[in-house]
Image (tube, rainbow, N blue to C red; front, side, top):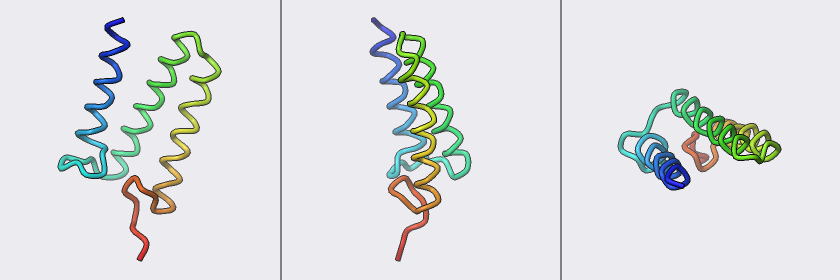
Length: 83
């Protein structure tokens, strides 16, 4: 039960400090994309380990594809801004 609370809080803290668009300590690309991919792979693995293998296997690649695509298209996660 403690992990069910602690792990999301930890992930939120990591995201807020190093990956959030308004963070003062935001990682630069490609380190940020690598950290995001690692976070989502870990999340997918934990979901799978909790007995939801299909959802875990789907979550990580879809999340990674969304973030990678947003970098290419200049989406809301910090890519180049359209003028």
